Length: 277
Image (cartoon, rainbow, N blue to C red):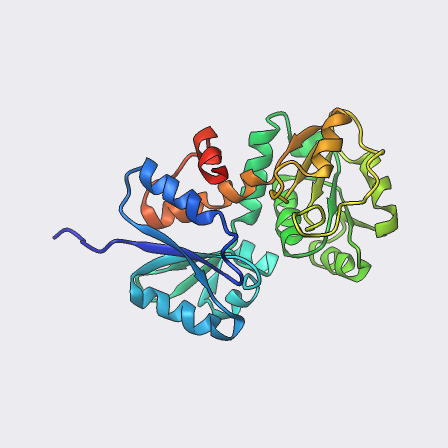
């Protein structure tokens, strides 16, 4: 007998109106002619557990999770992947047929996939990476860099204790640099990653000195609003290879779409155009 249930998925956050994930999933559902819907859901912290446990009863097969809920959903899930546990946060929930809620984190996958697509010559062996910021996004980035074989990572954050906490989690490949010296660590880096919100629309400017950037260095900014941040504009002028942050959003969504709707989507020019429209 044919299953007439239409799969539902969505993204939960607070706020959620700014999310571009619904545009992305609508594009893929149409492109691959899949039945299903993807819905933005505003959820407060107080209601998070109740909402997540109710979604499977409503026909949801899973959901993405964005700020500020990525850490808390790990406590609600019945089980989690090793990478979600290592990062200490989840951005993807799978509602299994046995009733269990499975938490995963695909941010690191999305970061590496975007880096490889935007800078085809990039490889873990090209040299040290410099990471700016020590929040949840930085944890995902660092975990993925170590996983693919980057041997040395310089890390700087406006509050040093948060950077030291990441060093404690990830070990001796991390060298913590004071924020006032953050510009200096760019001189020795083959890859530079901004994981902070600095430079994002409505946030403080990105003011780390960039005169240490070298021609050929791969520079990526997780901020994608604006798409061309000050960091990327100045890095490009310095002869660096720049990769914007939109691709990470697109690539991190691939595993969830495949699991929920049964086809692995491609991140291509049309995908970017649909999300930017």
